[in-house]
Image 1 (cartoon, rainbow, N blue to C red):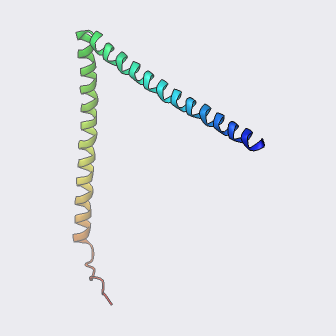
Image 2 (tube, helix red, strand yellow):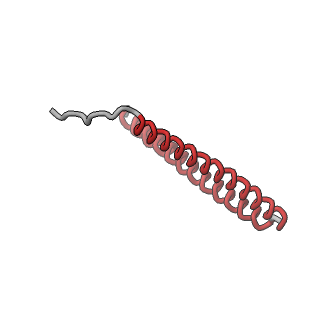
Image 3 (cartoon, helix red, strand yellow):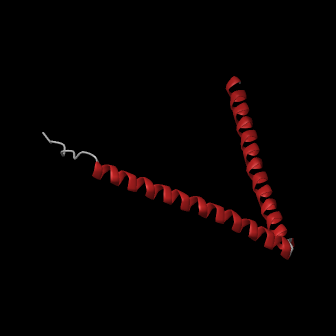
Length: 99
């Protein structure tokens, strides 16, 4: 009798957990679908001026990122040149001996 109660409790627990997980996944899918629908709807409802403003903001952001990358490339080139000069001006090192 005790083992049948344990089995019944185990089955009930498993069922409740399964239902909870399935409900959570279903709810998350529904919410994601609603968010996608809202985003698409906002895009369609945006006026021409709002779209232009958004594109200008995106352009400004990309231009600033471009400037950052160009500066990093210049800095890297400078460091490479400095290392080359140090290698030429410094004392010549003998290659390591194997053995």
